[in-house]
Length: 89
Image (cartoon, rainbow, N blue to C red; front, side, top):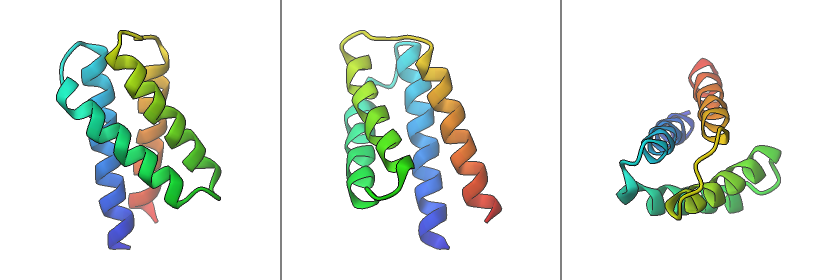
């Protein structure tokens, strides 16, 4: 249970990082956030949500080189959903 909450909090930090990158701040959190998503995605690879985490990690790296599109908001909503489900369990 505690592990689920810790992962939910870290997912929240990734969501804030995504929003920050969208507006040109928090670049220093991009690499750690992407690494976290890659590691979590590889650990839980059998779960379809883990593949989405890996895709978001790639998207974060692309945001560092200037790609900023509407997907950011969809991914933030995805993390909000995951956080809600984690704390509701």
